[in-house]
Structures are given as C-alpha cells and as structure tokens.
Length: 161
Image (cartoon, rainbow, N blue to C red; front, side, top):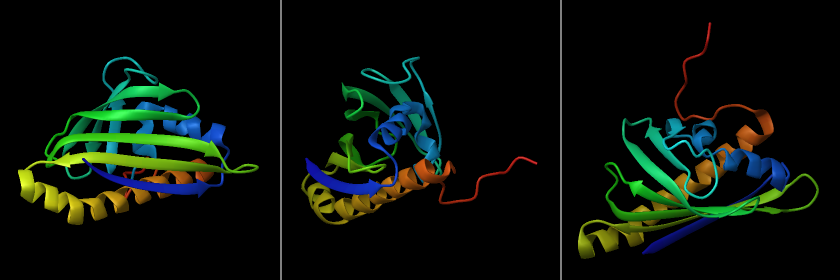
C-alpha cells in the first residue's frame, strides 16, 4: 500500500480541533469537496461509527472508524469506495497540542490502487501527489472552519434567503 502524510499546525487548541474531527458526520463542514455527509448506522463518533460522504462530483463513499483513541486519533477504513480506483483505503487523523491555543493535526492516507502493476505505478506517481493535495486542503479547511465557523467548499453553497 502507498502512504501519504501531511500535518498542519492550526490556531485552535487540541481539544477544539478534536471536537470538530470527532463529529464524524460533520466532515462536510471542513472537507472542501464533500458536499454533504451523514452518519449511516446511528453511531455518531467512536469505534464503529459509519458515515457516507457525498462529493461535489456526484460520487459517494462509506467510511467506518476502525480504531479510536478519544481526544487523540482515529483510523477510518473506506468500506465502500464508490468510483474511486482503489482496492483499499485507510485514513488516520491525529491531534496533538502545539502550545497555547494551537494544535498539530496529522492526516495519513494509505491506499492500494486498482489495476495491478499499472495501478501501483499510478499510485506511486499521480495518485500520491493528488492525495497529498487533497489531504492538505482538508487540513486547511479544518483550520478555516475551526477559526471562523465557516463551512468550507470549493464551489459556492446555496445561501438561505
């Protein structure tokens, strides 16, 4: 499996960052390409929580928390990959204090592409680069949401009248 890892120090405490990340169904608030998301099995956070993420391109995936250390980190397995060209995808989000009112959030993605040796090569080159950009944009979105309360999106969302 390939692995990509990004980290970002943001201007909120680890407790504040964790509160946002632990709202498992609320990822749409800071993930710029998730248009909407919801809990699909009644477990809102912690081990076994499951969510469906609907992307702005019309695709959807289902994810489940498979390891959980409250206040610190969780691991998510993509259980339904939708149209993604992957055999398997596993993500880990962790939060650590980084001084007064700051925290460092780390996002790691491990993935196995479809298509055998060609997929492996694509994973090593193009897909790693794309995942790195996506993970960095999610962490930037997390910081924006955490510091402003704004819902992050790469395309305008309808506003209430």
